[in-house]
Amino acid sequence: MLHMEDIELYIEVQIKNKEVPGFALSIINESEVLYEKSFDLTNWEDKNQPITENTIFRIGSVSKSLTATLIMKLVDMSETLC
Image (tube, rainbow, N blue to C red):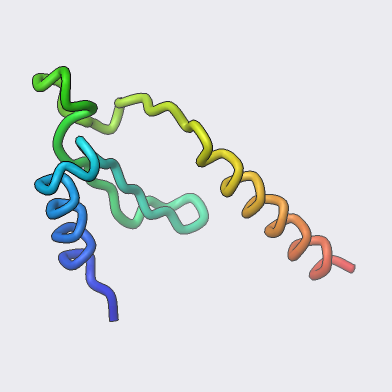
């Protein structure tokens, strides 16, 4: 089973290895926030900008997978209603 401590450790290793400057993670079930944590900095250039719950991120190419997921959820819901 995957534990939050394992996920946090993985993220911290990626930050330490300079794979990403920082990371924000939220896990939400319906309308309930189950887990929320931010890690390190917004970028490597501005060393004084920690990630917080109010940090705004550029979504970039991530929107394609989010859109596809939402479409499939709608398809699943429509099949359930029919």
